[in-house]
Image (cartoon, rainbow over all chains, first blue to last red; front, side, top):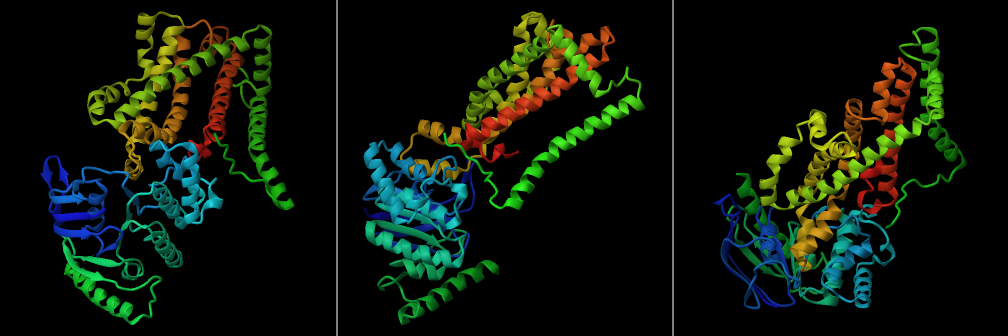
Length: 257
Length: 271
């Protein structure tokens, strides 16, 4: 499924009055099967852009389409992993029940539901923790439950909003590797929001660097023609790291002045 | 429903002893309090004003021999629990509605916030005129005292549900109705549970007031009429029983929260 954005702009509307533009003139085409990174300083509207693709918010300007059909709301073709550790899971359901929840909503028959649930839990190495409630899990495990519940739905597009941002560095590293192998296995398009340049380089095939808000825009697009797992000692990795760092620093300093 | 038990048995011998000792602190505290009362009442205070604990206990025995004790207890308890449950059954759907739909809130909110500041006690005489001196007026008053507390807590519980919970359900293709049943209601359960717990205390408050004004039975009636016979010890029996029944019903509700609906309210049932 190809996602295309044409001169997309967004402003929050409250009581008929619109606030200043958060995003403006975003043109972007995401090919089927691509792992795309939205990178930018905090507050630049990259999460907002992801929410537009998810269908949670509606663009104030321009057009968003999936395979030529306009996005009118959330749909089963797009799964979402939220940044917040505490709010997205259902705390009254066990890990297993959380993963099964979407399948039940979707009316998947019981036997298939169990198979898909267990397969998804296996992919994130949580098969042994199925009976636990979310409040007994670590932050990293909670995010893996979110990933598993998305995988169980088999969406063709995976949307991830800084899923590992609030985890410690070691856990983040491990989960990034796990993410790559999951994506390699299940395929599909992935859009991943982050403010961490290394994370972007570890995961993405293409990195979209956004300018600082308000009225944020796409500043540059970087292709990352490297095999997985990415080596941080690779000259190309180092070169891209330096260029993107300089690029993003320019944006951050704009905000500070 | 799963039973969640967070208290694990202590493994080390010394720790087990300490847990046992810790469990004795509350009973011991109560025992010492009663003892101070007994001694104080015997030595320093006119027993007519403050009878010693032993006299109150004998008063209770006396009431029981006249078949009055259980009559009064059950009369009050039926009114309290009946009104509390019925009041909650009315209040929870309204609270869910008000919390979920802006237009429902616009229509119902003014009534909630006007009525909830009129104490049930202010309505006792009116309800007796309207619904008679029988059980109906009493149960309705307890319902009234209960309903607004549960309503406000339920609605608050609904509006504080994090939007990510609903958004996640929408990515699974959930309908508004499915979200209401499978996300909104379970997520609001802790607030409903706490609201009902607070409302239980209000039920006690109002039922005593009603029973003092217009009843032939109940603990409020017992306390009120004891004055006529100068039976201060019976008065204390009534007062004691109110506290004791409150403790007992509250504890039962807590155990219900912990063990029956534990997966929904387990952290709210910890205090």
